[in-house]
Image 1 (cartoon, rainbow, N blue to C red):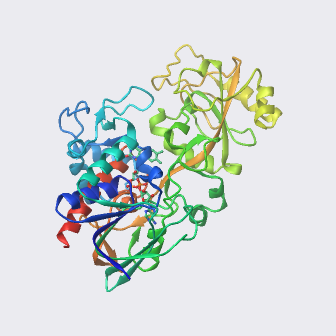
Image 2: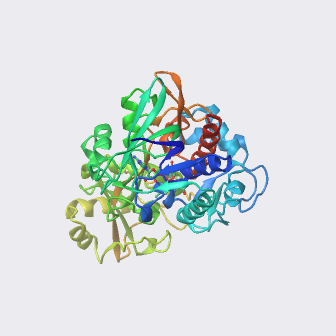
Image 3: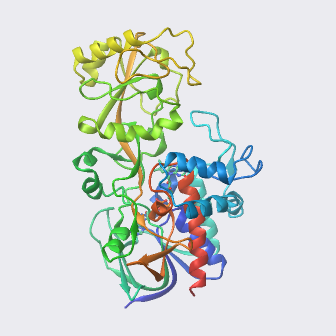
Length: 468
Ligand SMILES: Cc1cc2nc3c(=O)[nH]c(=O)nc-3n(C[C@H](O)[C@H](O)[C@H](O)COP(=O)(O)OP(=O)(O)OC[C@H]3O[C@@H](n4cnc5c(N)ncnc54)[C@H](O)[C@@H]3O)c2cc1C
């Protein structure tokens, strides 16, 4: 027997809640199907800290002014032009009232902390982070009568004549595992897919990236396996985005395989040299200030043997970057550091020696600005903050590729509608990471993920109301 339902939202993160709340406020009966157990609800939204919002004048916790043209210019710069201008501008404009919309539903904001990422003008920070935001939205949704089913992993959507006619879901003991228990069937009026990307399915990543992906760590939830995405794409629903594109950063190699979140990030790279398994440097560690270069290091490390790198600093670098959650490997000499890390000793000594010999006079060293302290005669150069590594103790951090999210997803229009073989579908909508590739095809701007999810979640909720 199939159960009937009004608006069914697949996923339990920010985009899903924004859609469910909007639908419920419009008088609809909204049902959320969340694959994860209650304690782990909320997907990658749990790990977030902020949302990027346009504002023509100071507003709430946002300082100064950040207008549409500056926002879109920032997006163009990070995406090599791979953005949909129309959808991106729609997100930017609608981002303006996201903080007040969220505040009205119980979310609190706080002024940004000063630190490695200076985002106080552009990004509004959630008080208590993403978990507090989600708790507030779940509470509000509950008060509106939204039903949430946990451990409800959607496995298949049946399509007939451009319409979703049935949703199949089941409990699964583990994210990639088979169903444990009955398959439940729902006949929906409309469906919002808000189930994130596919980055937690390592086999899918490996098909796109090759075997190197097996050494990647996933920064977010193990439940975002793209099960709904794969099911829909296989049936001809229009997809968008390059499967090989993902946002990846270099994180502490000791981070867990999933859900390490933001604390495993390492900010020491600009004050280090980074070598691979063969103790060779492979990229300019001082190319630009860290917030601008932080996202390139995931891919750089992914391209190295065994997908690993080692950032090496000396005692003078301690205190210049945000402390790490795990202590670094410590040694009194470079030889000892080589022994402790397993790096080839002679090669490491030679790499550090050549680097030190290439460093300029360091009297103008300035960790807070591009100081122009550049090496000479080595390749790759280090363009800023090139200071000799010669003051024991020495420290090393193992770096690995940490995947944040993937870009390949569902193509939507400005009403969050999906299409099949180029024709709009009757009752299938998408919001958040599941469709973010429709807006941005490459690169990333901090806080834009939550902007897309909040804006398109609300659009999908409104659109679903109109389908009743
Ligand atoms: C460590 C980290 C930090 C981040 N920080 C920020 C930040 O500060 N600002 C920002 O803008 N972005 C940030 N991002 C990106 C941000 O997390 C995403 O853009 C955003 O959370 C996407 O929201 P969403 O609702 O689309 O997906 P998610 O929040 O990931 O939710 C997806 C949901 O779908 C569920 N699900 C998956 N498959 C199924 C299925 N088959 N059936 C049912 N449910 C399913 C999952 O359990 C989950 O609840 C960060 C990401 C990470 C990993």
